[in-house]
Length: 439
Image (cartoon, rainbow, N blue to C red; front, side):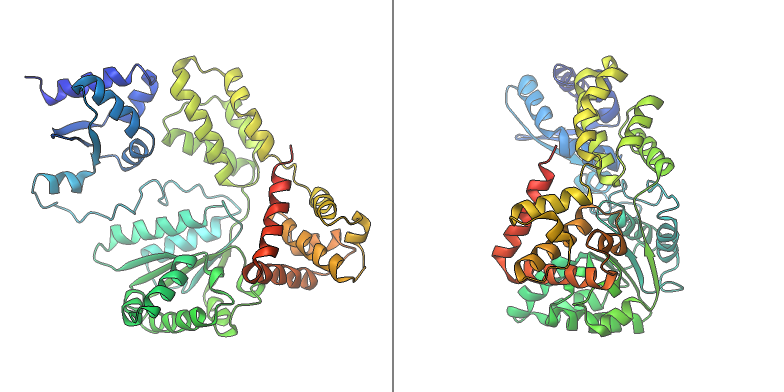
């Protein structure tokens, strides 16, 4: 009878028909078979990052390999250390973390640079010593710059240092939806207990509560309860509290009580460090020329860099050691071109003017007709959202030198209309799609 090790080798041999040796060595070197059940193949991988990658990318190839080995496809289960102990009926010697605490998003894997060092240092501080100095901690900046990574890192570090602590993480939209659902069903006390009994509350994208009166009132009381009990509160947003015109003044004041730390797009050196770090985690050995090429051309945010590296990884799976610099450049050229700064203030204005059948000079100028004003406000909104590096003052200069207060008013008005007028929201989305389709 074949041993489990022999069976696993046969599965790896079957995988080798579809995957390169580099891919197999990178992702499956720590995997072993736990058991072969009637309808399932049970595997164990102690490495959290490799396990999550296997579950995300390789379950189907493993399933097809089981068809070759066992003449039938088996469901594939990949266990972590605690799940393995539970499978064998053994209590873990150490308290494990929730599967949500992904070790890929820790302080060790976060690349700090001049544009995010304050946020990184403050986040690390509150994870080590909650509610001692920075309470609340408010981290703000555009999408894809690492705010959520920092929240995950705080959560992971907090649970590692204080396994019994009640750390609650929630996205702003989920907080809203949960509030509506539980209050409508008469379970408001359950909702309040969940959040007000937390030792640490982490709220991602808090800006979504702005303009929702009942939700803001609920969060106000939750905030007060936690703060007065000496519990840590950390929030992220795409903008500072002062730029949320629909935010209740009571909340705005409280959000500004502690430390506000912004994150900005990484500079060249930081981008290069991010590429080195993430390529190492992914098991790829990139040349200095390739890393420099990516760092020079992908400048907007970390998420775009990750997208580039994932595309390279796909080529790596196919070509393995045959992947050379020329092949990589071809592989990422289109993505780099899309990620590059083709979206300029002028192009946004041209696109909006074209959509509303207006002259560009009219859109930039002082014309106060309602249709022109609406189009101008949409252009300001899209400029702010699609060109993260532009400050409010810079946007104002594109429209005949308007000040940042006028721009801020326009942003708030467009956001409010998008929430209340589905037709208007579709218009903004259509223009956004048109701009993104530009090559």
